[in-house]
Image (cartoon, rainbow, N blue to C red; front, side, top):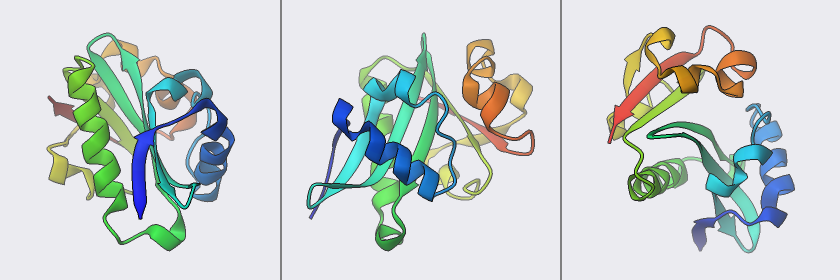
Length: 143
């Protein structure tokens, strides 16, 4: 059975390893780890997703699922749960950058936008300024 829970500080290294294994950026994760969720199977981190908060906007980031757990709906469950959490946190707009999942996120209501249309605070994030390449798709969801 897989459980989704708020990430604990001692799970940071496991999440960073998962992100490295899935070729996702790790910069900025530690600074925003308080707003991460993990998926646990037999006590092992097999999925993760996080948010960086910028007032009423947030950047969804680091959605990753271990290879042996893909195709089972875990990415969808993590996304649904983090969006539910965002509503509880008072977030009104969620942005993301993706190089590989532009077809995945529209099922949650995300729409492509030009990068320059993202909130200025989001544009100043590590993800926007240094981590994701300029070819990454930018998307927005209004909650």
